[in-house]
Image (cartoon, rainbow, N blue to C red; front, top):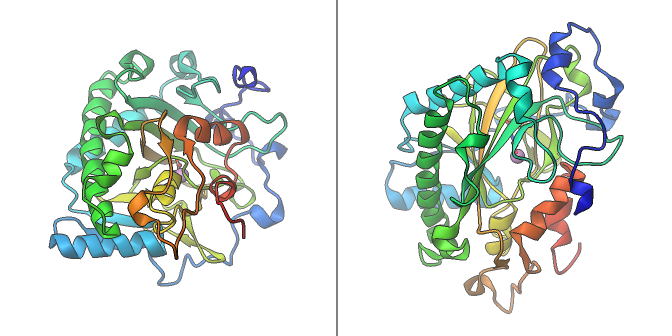
Length: 352
Ligand code: OGA
Ligand code: NI
């Protein structure tokens, strides 16, 4: 684990590069031509990720969520029960943090050992190409890892607001876990139980994508699937950026105001034995607008073996994934950075 102690080279804040006023980006951020945001995306077509009304008839909501998770791995939820004013306050305090002077942010600089704090890269490969974004990563659950002292002290309302926001999101995730279980035809508490029940985990990563002078050459976040259970993403209402893989194309998500974007992550793909899909996604940046997003990662207890749920294994559909703990699983992205779906593919018992 020694290799995870320190970053392989000095950390450069993307926000500082952006604010330097340079008209070009450093070579480290320039993606190979095939990995750049391309004009072959479906962004302007009518293809949209599904929108689900959580206050609708429960049976209807279950079907809508289940089919979205099978076909897209992504959906947006409206009428989800979280107060829009709290959502706005959460974004405002975090935008406030990123706009504090560097001396205020720098004491929270993170290390690859825990990732907690203010960061500017994923992965520890020396010389790796980098993404155009800074972030703040913090632990929400279990209680033993949650330490408000590691959260920014400024703006002064950040800690209480983040506390309130993350508690609401844990509730929403537990509700969605029941919907997901029912959609799989298993007991409504089954996924939660497989996550370790009350020992379930959660983290928050607030991403900050500064304006970029050459947005066509880079990405805010390279293609990846999320390693944990499920992700609840809150984005700016008026700035697009997230793209979701659909077959060979990238579909740009059109944010619905006051909604959350939900996606299945690798561990629910594994537990559902591949019925629900953890889908690759990436982030584009802009020359005219900065963008803030709050990715709430709801995760299984990290030290228990995770494998397809027994009720979902049949002779026609044997277990498609090997057993692993989440602690072992997440080391991969922490070392290698975002690498598409290569990690969950490597767990498959039959390679295709
Ligand atoms: C993530 C992520 C998307 C976004 O943080 O894992 O995919 O829009 N974020 O910032
Ligand atoms: Ni993601």
